[in-house]
Image 1 (spheres, rainbow, N blue to C red):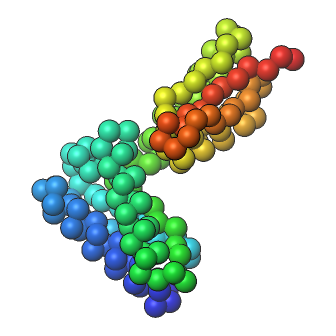
Image 2: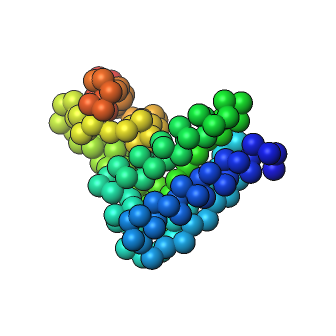
Length: 156
């Protein structure tokens, strides 16, 4: 671990501990550095407040951690991932299942299906889930926080 790794690791750990304390959660924090990625995980029960609706709070904490590390050291840009008891893997599984179900529906009905607005990470999961799905293509449409994925049936 280089000096920059330790700084990022410590900053993420400190931020997560402060957020957990501020929210009054009975939880512990684990931070692991692996090459270009620093992963901070919150462990505990009843972490819904930390995760937020559709992961909005966890995304905000992740963005804040990234911005803090970039601001502190321009040369030590690391990918920052914040998770809580496997939330990210569960969210990816849910989005993948939903995307495939809606892809099938788009093919059967011959209609474009549009998701609600999503963050870039969730949109990427949907695009990847349907990349090799027969009979559909995906496209992101809209700007900023209103950006959403469309599932478009294609003629054979």
